[in-house]
Amino acid sequence: YQPLMDAMAKTMDKTWQAGPLLAFEVKGDPTNTHEVTCPYDRRRQVGTVQWTTREQAGKALDAAWSAFPRWEATPVAERAAIVRRLGDLMEAHMAELMTLCSREGGKLLTDGIDEVREAVDFCRYYAMKAEELFAEPTRLPGPTGESNDLMMGGKGVFAAISPWNFPVAIFCGQLVAAAVAGNTVLAKPAEQTSLIAHRVIELLYEAGMPRDVVQLLPGDGPTVGSVLTSDPRITGVVFTGGTDTAQIINRALAARDNAPLPTLVAETGGMNAMIVDSTALPEQVVVDAVRSAFQSAGQRCSALRVLYLQEDVADRVIEILKGAMDELQVGDPRDLGTDVGPVIDEDARRGLTAHIDRLKGEGRLVAETRLDPAQTADGTFVAPVAFEIDGIEALEREQFGPVLHIVRYKASEIDRVVDAINGRGYGLTFGVHSRNESFAEEIARKVRVGNVYVNRNIIGAVVGVQPFGGQGLSGTGPKAGGPHYLLRFATEKTVTVNTAALGGNASLLALGD
Ligand code: UN1
Image (cartoon, rainbow, N blue to C red; front, side, top):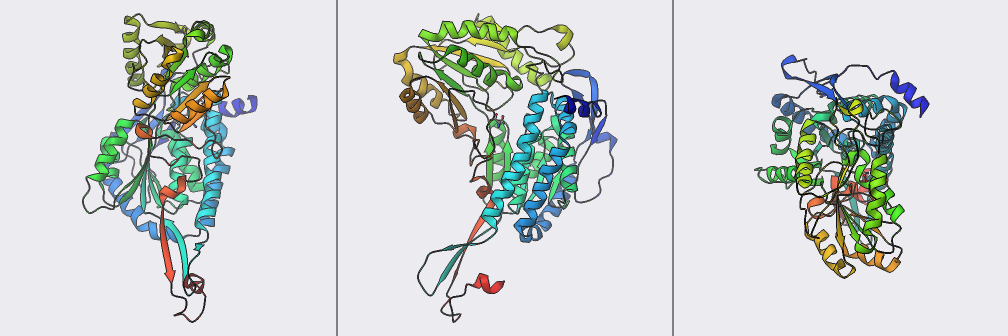
């Protein structure tokens, strides 16, 4: 880590500035400029962000709309080359992006590395997939005297609305997928992480992306988001964030008159569970549960929220868990010894604290990591905490932070546990710990989720290897980082030619060349 840390030190005290990056010049506007503070030290200002006005958002849409036909007609190899160059540039600027991830997003160094790596992987993977899908029309078998070709194109203008918890990876993954498939993109990053988004888009322009093809619109939902979801020229929205917000976007898109039937690609929340049976190895369970529940301060939609322990192993697992949680170091995300950094902001801390205080009031506390005030007094920290909950069906809503809920079950109640997991309506990640292969297999088959993990942690899906995304309240699919993702950003056109009438067997497409 030392070379990375040395490189990060060079930009650690910088004050950053961000604002809209649009196809046209934008004037500075101090009245619309917002301060960015650091989650682990709220006394420190990290920089300022100028938000996009409704008028600018409207003009950005005009530009994206007119750029679409030209961009769609740009050969896919050229589109993919720009995206690959972005991957290379992000890799070259890893330390700087990691600095921003920690100062603006409160991310640990190790999480910062994962974050940039994942963004680079998205660029390379989607570039490769786009070349497979879009380069040549697919010739389909058919009767003689006729040729049938399937041609792929873009859809139009996409709004990409991204979360603060993966400010490089998901921000990048969304816009790169939409753009490489031939769409123009208006990207609205989370308000909390606009500085990072701004730096990534600067690198994207350096990589050769035309400014009217991808534009950056920092700002809030009511101002920028509402323009992006109400305009009939928006063909689709790719969104990652809360389920409630996805529902608002869905309604807004559906309420438009004279607009195309919208595409919504949403990846939302989860009430992710792990089932531990009596044959599981308690030590392994604890390592994986702690990582799944508390890494990134539990601020992953993939994070573990409910740990179901079969009664024969419950006491043993809880005992080891208490020890493991005593050892967690909460504090400055830039220290290599830190395991858990801050939560994103004061609102997040307040919401989590209300939930934690309620469960403490009910006498349900099992373990809580100690906070060292010298490390945590100035930031928005929440101590990792575990509660034991009564009732297999308890808990309905996602708590987006380091809070683990434990439920004991009897072997005879396993069907109820699975029904409870499926009954909540979410379906993102899931884990099972068991040395009984047929049990693990059966459970994996029954749970209605997107990603199942057996005898390991349930976070950190790898692009191209573990395509990520859920079902039900957890999202629309297809899976990010998977072979079908780009299809949601594409149109298909079937071209049937009466080749006999052309006096030969040549296809119109070939003649067009
Ligand atoms: C999210 O938290 O929004 O599997 C997505 C993971 C990441 C994706 C998390 N690759 O933890």
